[in-house]
Structure formats: C-alpha cells, structure tokens
Image (cartoon, rainbow over all chains, first blue to last red; front, side, top):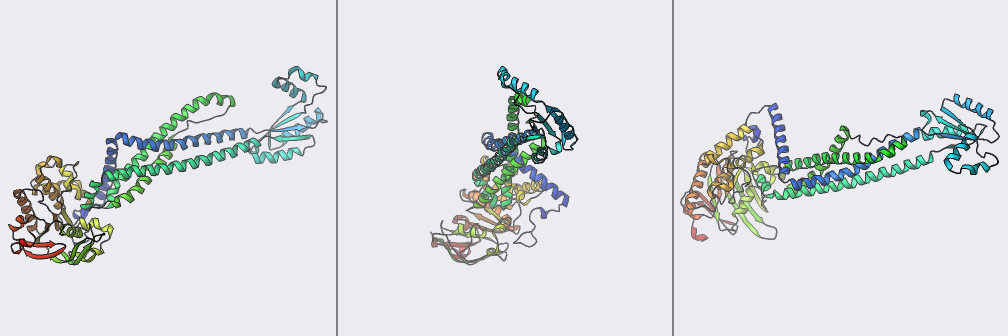
Length: 326
Length: 230
C-alpha cells in the first residue's frame, strides 16, 4: 500500500496474485539473486578465488588440528583400555602361595586375566632385553621378585576404577608393591586438553579474521556498486533489497570456501596418514585420520557459510545505509 | 499535490539554500520551476524526494507531512514519485529493458507483468525497438527517454524532473516536454525544474521562479518577467 496515496497499490498488490504464487515467486526471486551473485563472483574469478582461499585456509588449519587432536585422544583411550596392574610379590612368598593368590584373584569380578611371571623367567627376559647378558650370571641370587600381571575387565579399566582396584590388591598379604602405570596417561590427557584449548583459541582468532576479511571484501563490492545503489535507492529500493545480493555473495564465499577447506583437509590428512602408517603398525593402533565423511563436510560448510554471511551482514548493514543519493 | 509551507533549508556550514518558500502545486497540474543555477531548484526537488530534510517548515505531498516519514519508509515514498534526472542515472551495464524494469523488480511484480508494463512504457517514449540495447548505444535524447520510461513504468501519481532537457537541442527538448504533457493529460501531476527559459516561454504553464533561495514569482509563464534574473 502506498503511504501517500490512498488506494494506490504498490507492487504485487496491483495484480491479483495467489498465496502460493507469491511463495513460488519469493523462492524463484531468491534463487535468481543467488545465481546472479554466483555469476558476479565468476566474472572476477581471481579476486573471488583469493577471498575464498583465505576463508578455506583459515578453516583448514583449525580443522586439521582438531582431527589430529581428536584422533590422539582416541588412541590414548585405546591404550587406557589395555592398562595393566603389576603386582610385585614379597620375597618370602613361596611358589605355592603365589599360585594360591592367583587362584583367588581369578575369582575377582574386576579381573579379566592374571599372568604369573616367575623370578627366573623375569630374569631371563631381562637378560635378553637389557643387553647385560652374561654379566647377570655373576649375581649370587636372582634379585627379581615374582610378578603378577593383573588385567582388569573393561569396566574397571578406566584410571579411577583401576586405581581403586589397585588399592584393594595392595591389601593382599603376598603383595609387596602394586603399580598402575597410568600417570603418564593422565599427563597425556592434560596435554591433549591444552592442545584442545589452543585449537579452539586458534579457531576463534582465525574465524574472527575471516569475518573481518569477508566484511572488507563485501565493503569494497558495495563501494564499487555505489552508483548502482544510488539509482536503486532513487527508484524506491529498500535497504533490504539492496543488501540481498551482497548477502548472497557472502553465502557463496562461505560455501565455496567450506568445500575448498574440506578438500584441503582431506589431502593433508591422507598425506599424514600415509606417513604415519608405519608408526601405527608398530603400536597396533587404529588411527583413522581419513574419516572425513559427509557429517564433517556438513559441519565445515555450516561454519564457513555462517562466517561468510556474518561478514557480509556486518558490512552491508553499515555501508548500504551510508550510501544515499545526493 | 506538492505543498511547501514556509520552508527554509540551511546546509551544514551555513549555506542557506531556501528561504521561507511557500507554494502549492495542485493535483493534475503541470508546473515549471526555474531560476539560476544555485538558486535552490535542486534543493527544492530533494526536499520532495526526501533526499534532504527541511530545516524549518513543512513539505506535504497529497496532504501527508513528509517530516512524519521515517527513514525506513523513504523507499516506499519514492515509489510514488517518478523522478527524472539531468544525468539520467541509468545503469550502463544493463539493457534498456533491465533499466526500465528496475522499479517493478524492486516492487516485486511478476515477470509477465513486468514485461507487459516495460513494453508499454517504452512504447510511450518511442523506444520499443531498443529494449535489448545498452544505454551506451543510444543517443543523449534516447537515454533521457529511457530515464522517463523508468520514471513512469510503475504509473506514479507524481512526476519530478530535474533539468530533463539539460543537454538536448530545442527540438528534442520540445519532444520531451510533449511527453510530459501526455502524462499530465493522463492525470499525473508534473513538476519540472529547468533553466531553459526559452522552452518555458513557448508554453502556458505555471512557472515558479527561485532566486537566492526565495520564491520571487509564481504564475503563468507568459507573465513571468525574464528580466528579473537575466
């Protein structure tokens, strides 16, 4: 409805248009503008590619680090599952009472498996592994204690549960020392935690930079179209109408940047995976770096499109308003 | 249709463009606004299209006080006013059709309706066969007529023209004025700012004359005394 002239219809009101036709028009209009904005990017491929590249690489860095940290975390979890408790028995414990202890321990619900290592076999193993060889033969008697390796069930394999089990085992008469080597794992956890925080910080900083860069690019686009915007305002275009193509440009920056980032991350991870394969086989762990499926792509696209639109939104709200016909 | 009540405009910096201007152009009227360059013609037109706001006084269109119009509503006001500029303000990288259709696209008309109306508007200004051309391929007079087609394509009740014959020869200028007369006869109020006194002198239309921001004459063109500002 016209503000000044009663009864003068403006735009779509002037012709009878059905509700559904209006909806269809809305979507075709938006689609047309989206395609137009894409065409605009296509017409200046070099400049567009630079902006898309900035966005892509800014997302690539934190994404790659994130995948690496996440995988390290998974590996450490695998190690943790294999956590073992070593029980060093008293020197005066006889072979028979040691076997008795083993039989008792096997009945514990927390324990999956128990392995007995006699002091002789322990010495033998030590001899081959340490490289001291015959030097050990000069020892008067075997200084090594009997060792019982206790593997907790998976339910009791977490650091805290295993710690409780260890305390319980220490109370056994035959046990001199019990050791659960989990401290290094906890330290690794702390390190991973720090790494995670750093990745987050890096991501936030880079995303912030991306928003500013997109905002500046859109600002230049707006200034380049200054004359056109003035004309549009003179013939009655609202700010929202003028803003729309720029918002779509931001959307495309984000969308294309996201896809480019996904491809880059994939290439980097394939390369890292290849060079890590040897290492992985030695440690018998599953390091699935190439798990960059549809959901990851979707997540990265959502992030990059959000960044693109945010950047352009900040820019259009400021600069489209500033351009007024004089 | 256009009513000024004791309107003064002082630009930041102290330059006084208009002083206590009072006039009323009736609905369906065709009137000229004239005066030296710098007399305040452009400022007066800018106050109507809300490119500027008056410092003192009221500007009314169809009885509505423009001071009540908020910034966000200005776009809708401009859809009611067909504006024609000396520098014609065409988009040089768009075809004549795209230029003329712009107001309709902005208002959200259907494609079919846009094609129909643009065709009619171009027919009126005699450029129907140039729809697919770029403005750069047209002559100055033709470009001006594209601007006029764009101004009338959404059938506004009011037409404003700022030096529409600015750099055209007398014959072309007359053609343009005849176009405005056609629109006026169709019921559109027309308000034309020009310093082309020869053009006005040949017609009997109401002429408002500005000098140093003041309205010095208001009457039929034959009565206006050219000596006043020559």
